[in-house]
Length: 191
Image (cartoon, rainbow, N blue to C red):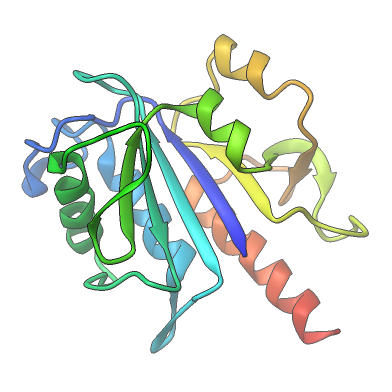
């Protein structure tokens, strides 16, 4: 399984946001929706061997993590509103310290990056890391940020994690996921 963890620094933790204003009132939820879609969608199919974790840090509630699992996800269509609707349902669902399913293949729990790093081994995607095209092996989990840089606290939490790069330029989060998945597909095809 390949995992992607995306931190949404301004993404709301409340399920009351409007699907018509995901970039504004929902705290750039549109970026996270694009990351979900990029993680799973192929032409006429879904990647079943991927998991996408969204860390929502924008309040008003404490941090929450929403998990999409490719093997079991249902009702996900290749548009931002579809992913946004599933996130909204997850946030409206009763949240506990354990992942609980809100809709098929979508789960939510309390906690942010520190908690998730205890469960999901990750490498940081960073333009200054080791090039994924020349790295002898790649990890199964990748951590990236939304449109904002990692905070000082996050940098402290990830300071010892390996770092990989998809190239010398800073890309949008969803584009970075595409490049990583393409490299993993190429490696799998050459085995």
